[in-house]
Length: 510
Image 1 (cartoon, rainbow, N blue to C red):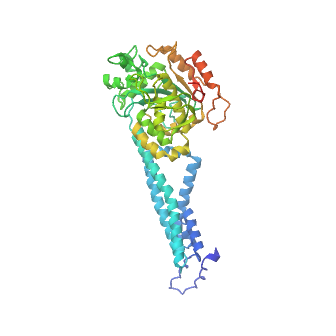
Image 2: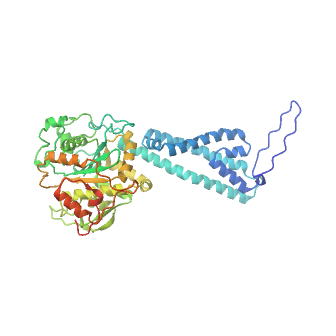
Image 3: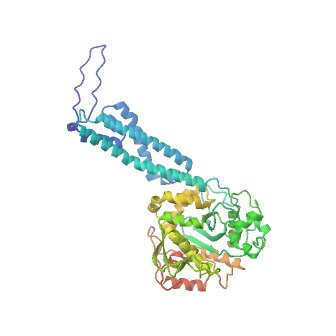
């Protein structure tokens, strides 16, 4: 370093009493590369450049806090990732952290610029000024970019949590849950997935898609129960006020079409406002009670998605990949005799955008509700597969913007870190599915609820482990899997089938 800087002045001579001692001469780099090296050092360890240039007071004011902040950030990132996750789902703390990070960046910027000004060689040529200024400018931009990027993501995240997950009043959500015990001591958490045909805050949404997602909180093993929209006489738990009104099952008001399961969401708030207690979504609370009473399992939370807006979510993710075993209509109406506009053609690993993914999930021309329900469970499986951390991060702003418009739930924000942890477990665990389709045991016009409850109990028993290491993803189905699935469903209509099996590509098999 001695070759790149001016030699320090010899020690000041001893002064006579009554005269002030000379201050040590300040230090400058002798060459431009030396000045840039000291500036870069100060960018990595703010304050180090001040010390090198013998501005010790400034150096000791800046360097220790910088080292403390760097050490704390490293400790939180490496030793306490859960604390970072908690921060991400606390809008107030997230906004404060963003403001603090912005202030720290401004201080860093001041330190870097002043360090360069203090250590640059003097005198200097014009090209030294140009090169040095350009280097410092690029260094500041390189650091500013991720800071600004992170701040934008933080504010988007805070807005999403405040919009979707905060201030949701539910009459049926679990009461005895905390951040330390998010599942209330239970082994499973059950979330009712709803697909509606209108805005999520519109009164009278028709919920044509109803899937109960039951997740093992320890292993992530998940079972989906797809319920037909036309299931009649839904039961309510014995301790629910709705059971006193409908002791023999939900009958709604008017023609038998109002007795279907998909009518509960809009009919109960209209006929019995406030019957379940204080709630900002009485329809969802009533439907949770209907599914809970019919299947004899607690329904903890709901997640409602506007199906027309579902395409926005898929587009924001960059599309999804599914296997198509038979042509699937896009558009068309069987009852009105309207032909489809086109068909999604069969093939393995078909990449679908949001529009085609919506028709893959909803298309019914020439098919029935049960085929549609099977495709819906495959779509959920495809979304789980697509939810790779890097992909979600890259497209997060679009996902958050779409989510604010089309998602409604009663999951509280304080439990979001626990749900994120569980979602990571689900991605590596088995996902099984039960579709309640018409058979000798089940008829939606007059369901045998005792049989349905037996099916649910059987499906929720822990399945035998497959030979698979964590991190390998879910098992890949063999070409012979689908016939085995069909034989299983024919022999046992309530059998729980691996989603990876039923959703595989099997040419010639619908």
